[in-house]
Length: 372
Image 1 (cartoon, helix red, strand yellow):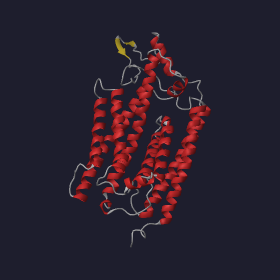
Image 2 (tube, one colour):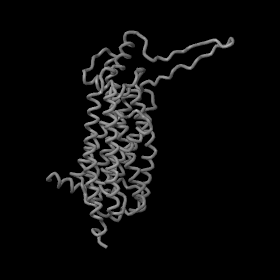
Image 3 (cartoon, one colour):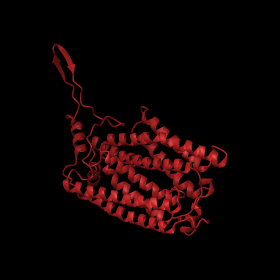
């Protein structure tokens, strides 16, 4: 049987249609998220400014913990104060913003519509990934096109899972859908590869283990990176307010709706820390697979090297996050550098660098697509 005959062209065509359909629904979700941010009430924002302004004037902070001592049969009882989460970079205690909808019922409605559209688009895109796999009877990540569509599906799945767990992460929706659309646009134009069979080196059960964990880790690292970037913006905003500055109207409208810098910092740290052991396993699994396929566990191939560099940066971030003097912004810069390394390992190494992991002639295809 020839390779061409082994491909179900009908399922491959259905997969392409589903991916384009998912892009259309994601676009609708994008506009719904924009509407939530634009038309959500602005009358209920300003909590950060109020808290920091009161503190700057010597007033009492909202929700400040208080210690109460009461007598109980001659024995003094120290009542437990309310626990306040502090920002890693300092001692600012500010409340979380009301969300993209600004605490408004109409804005919340737009947000719910956006999430519903996201769920629908996720289901359609998952169908596109599944039919792509069925068209060749293998895992749907044998080239960068398949990796892209699977990666974006998993990233949206992580977001929806956090929402299902009642986590306040709807602020993640707009940047997520924006980058998903960019990712899919790149996939269907520059990186598109026709459905086909794998090269011999990829015929292994390690393809299901190693590559699937790499995709999942990348999706979670992406979520953590978005949280880290927003943390830097929110921390700068809070610092400006604390020093008596007056941010612009647009910055205030956006920043006041986000969680506090302390909450964003904690969110990013927990996300990155949770997935870091799995990234370690991913590298180990890749080394074992390399030993089976090429007769050596580690050869400093560009993909192997940058996977290790990414691991080092994330390990440095987790260490810095727990080290006095390196918390807050310094640690956040390391986290962003770590994700940039992951992106370079994914795009740069595959497109611009030759190595044993260049299976689908990606670099040639990209250069030809741009007329080089």
